[in-house]
Image 1 (spheres, one colour):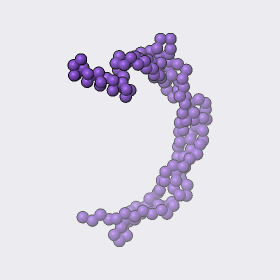
Image 2 (cartoon, helix red, strand yellow):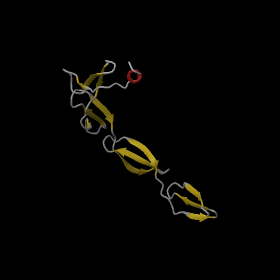
Image 3 (cartoon, one colour):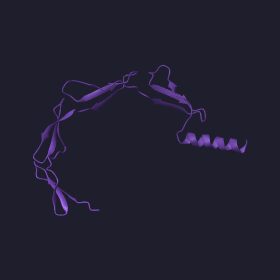
Image 4 (cartoon, helix red, strand yellow):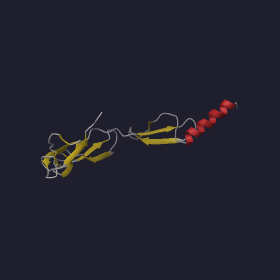
Length: 143
């Protein structure tokens, strides 16, 4: 065996030991198309994996935010919660109040101040929120 053949054999073994197997996955006979297998040509290890192909997310029922999607090949399902929050205004501290259009869940969003214009006060610029009174200050840039 030449030096290069030895290096190649070592490299293939190292590649397989770290999970980088060669070969192409194919459908397992008698199983749904999402069940795949291959045999690595370098180390002869038999490998399997599942590669589901899901259809689109659908809501399960009215006034509920649970969504489900099913694999097009088998009976596997994925589930998630997907809210559709809309703004219902802000509270006295300018925190946005959100409500889900589907399930009516309420949650707080980010601050939404109603700012006055910036005005100069000495060496600073200041402004305040017309609703909650929060103020901001920034330095005036000088060249």
